[in-house]
Image 1 (tube, rainbow, N blue to C red):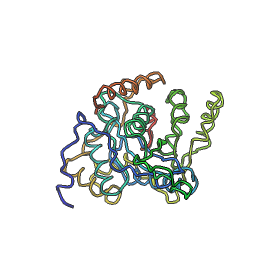
Image 2 (image 1 turned 180 degrees about the vertical axis):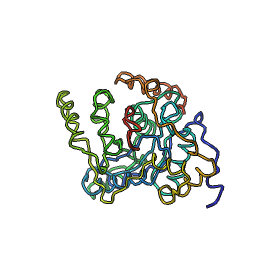
Image 3 (image 1 turned 90 degrees about the vertical axis):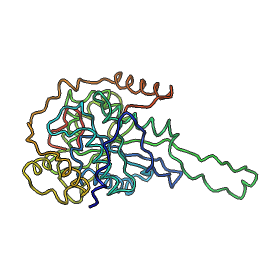
Image 4 (image 1 turned 120 degrees about the vertical axis):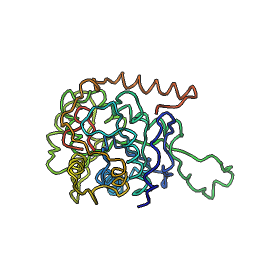
Length: 329
């Protein structure tokens, strides 16, 4: 391992630029471009986090013929989220970037959420990425259909056609369980995520999906919606229960984490001495995560859009670690 590969300075959130360098052009112009987004702590990022994206892509190819995956994003939570064992946002963003660069040619890390001074609910993060792709970038380019023989009088256009991308949240079955717990997620946010965007759930051993679905279906029916049609379930054909919590425990105890994380992430952790301190396994969420309403989401996104319009730039595991946040990756 070359030392310089993990010695890049920490990102500067004050110089935020939305990453789009790995967004793919749509190959089939008849399909809807799909972007997958995973939100979470990533403290640290593991092979399981990365593997979820590949499983979701296989699911789309095998059972969602109307969609084509064109990109994937990891969005690490900001330092404002109080959780035991949470490394700084700069470290977590950098580890995610190194992992994506080493293991993937299509995954990216959006540091916007990590750079925010306040906690951002999932709905805001999804809206932010959607706005960057579909408004600021104009959507996803796709090849126009070939001219037919009867179209010889049509003047060819030099403008590349684009389609708006659909975003879907990606997480484990424990994410679904937090969504079904009263008071954890606001129903307005659930409605927004499960109506406007969508959800991919990677099934995990020991998680009862049917119990988690029942309350969601009840709330959906009461709202006159059909949330279930926007939830996709992906089976784990090879069990993978790597947990960031267990990784941190191994590191504190001086145990090997080889082959559980990308090698470049292991080197980064080793060079900076991360996760050596004993954690206090008690979470303090109440002060940093008040309940959010749909109005708060609209206000946050609308405020950011105003800044962009004025020519400015934006700022910027499982086992119950993220229950109040509703982010389980």
